[in-house]
Length: 96
Image (cartoon, rainbow, N blue to C red; front, side, top):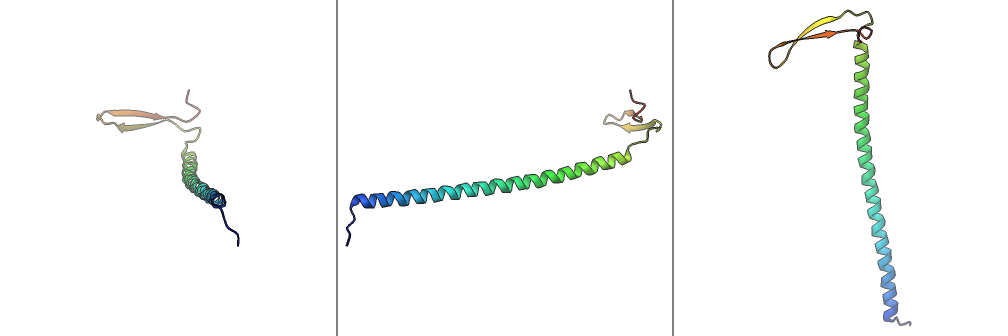
């Protein structure tokens, strides 16, 4: 039967500790990568939703844009001071 010295037990402990340390480090790196991926996916979905809303808004604004031969229209609006404010709406060609 083989007898183990203190030196052999020290080396065995060192090898096991290095293996466990490496394994724990790899688990932390994997968890960090998974968390970062989840954040990026959530951010991408949010940005895609905002992009779709902006695209739809531009589409509807283009549909509501006046024609080139559109005459100016006087619109009266009231501000907070209860003073009437005149707003003129012109077509694209008539603007300076």
